[in-house]
Length: 146
Image (tube, rainbow, N blue to C red; front, side, top):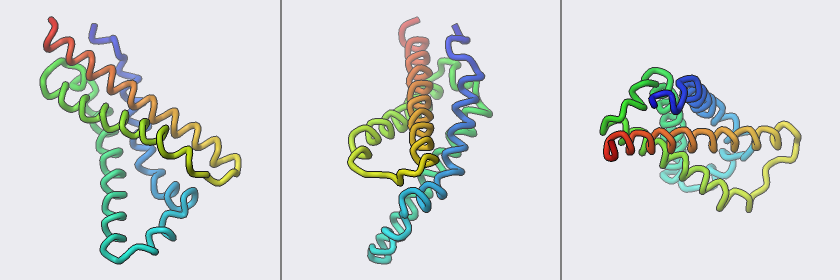
């Protein structure tokens, strides 16, 4: 049953998460003109916004490294695997829920690259949420129902 979620899918998700971390500054700058908006904030709030942006980028990168380097450990049905997959799964489920609930109210630039990029990024977010939710469920069943 350990092959319920193949390693290649977890590794692909890890690569995708690292990609999101690396592309994040470009998206903030080119797609959302984020820095112009941040400059309108008070200095302390500017630093807080930038710090949270770095947290997001760091988490995405770290989650990707965990997926690539500890693939089998994420599905070994231990309490730690349950905790980590639960944390990462809820992170991405929250991202997808936020994306659905709030982001449609805003427009992104209408150039084809940004529209295609939006679809691709949303697909990645759903992939991450799905993979980690499945891993969490697999670990939960292995720990508590076997």
